[in-house]
Length: 68
Image (cartoon, rainbow, N blue to C red; front, top):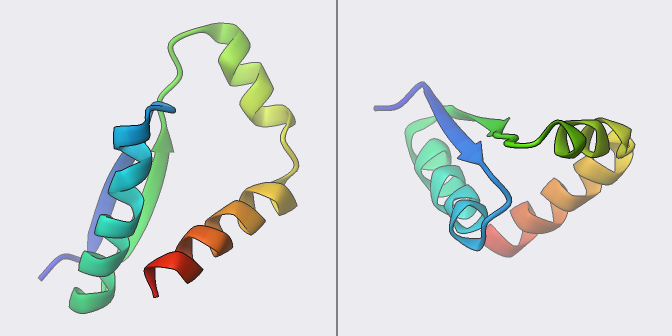
């Protein structure tokens, strides 16, 4: 049904709650999700790029485990 699902993230709780929903839909349809971080202030962009990729991967793995 869906090949790719774009999930825009702005740091709000509502946006974070969309991740497991998108993951379930993607899993059921054999698709994938693309997380897109929306930044409103330049300083937020700098802070998000400073976070090590391993930490981001750990966070996503923990969220995935809660969905499964």
